[in-house]
Image 1 (cartoon, rainbow, N blue to C red):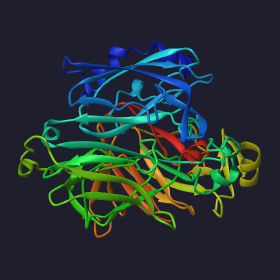
Image 2 (cartoon, rainbow, N blue to C red):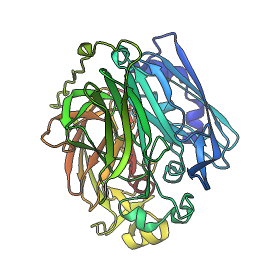
Image 3 (cartoon, helix red, strand yellow):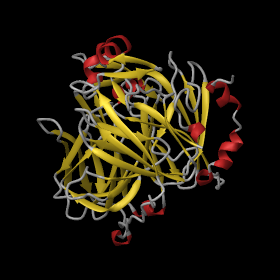
Length: 460
């Protein structure tokens, strides 16, 4: 019998390109990058060098840029002493390029190389990160931003990525290695840190031009921390969510769960500076500052910039519904569940197998098939967070409509790829399965995924 690994190796690449109609290569421009995962060092404090895993020895990894319709080609080298792979979070990707070890590719072994090549047909803010034991590799710094531009971006004067991370450091400003694998973290909210950085720095400052428009692209790269941002502005103008344009929303503050992205638009007229704060803690933290400077050249006409959403909810009359009941964790109601076909009680699962979370009483993994759906079928993931903890639910290779409860005074359908579900919440995630392949569905609190809250949906 052909194994999954052997199947991936012999599967014709040309078939993937032709079968995935929304993702055919229809431009001639190939944008090339080289990425290397390295053991590296970084100074969180000037007196101490922390040992990290970094792409190209940079914290965060380099900003990858492309325009809509381009093909991204990333030649990757693994210089670590352990396997790894890269997932392109939010990209409607070709399945073989999605970066999930053993599901879409073999992990890249130490010293080996792998070339990722895929079209980018949707503009927006995305990011890339390790997907092999990501609960440790992401915590050590293996991630970076990815931005796909369109013509609207030409009208914006300043475009700044705000990649936030919540590190757990010890008293010597080193990664707290001893806490990796902590059952307390894995069974509760996940690995919560104690050191907030923006683009690798503590409270950095950026310059933006006066009388113009600035775009801020927020990304939450934390293992588990749900971040909340406010600013010295009266309102923050949200224009895109998870890379998708939305009807402009003016909010006092906004929440970002792990894996989520939000873009803001700021009119700099009559501003001297803008302070942003992270306010999920008991004490608010200065996140970063924007200093408004005089423009050397004539600024662009800001009245020409229009962001609008043209999203249409698919008809759900004949949709396939997949019921998902999330259980487990501390103070939960999961008394027993199946692991690899064997039913075990919760205590045994926790102490012997380090498995704490389940979908439909099944302990998940990268090989747990949640459902098979037909190509182009409308699918409803009817999800119930029957746990005591929030979960940031991410679907690979697709965006889904969800009647969001994440924003005050807004209960509209929003197209997302990562949705924060509160304890006890029920939500319907609706998508058109127009992208063939095996697509992971998991909690982006990375410790939750590692301990069972993960599965895949097969689109055939």
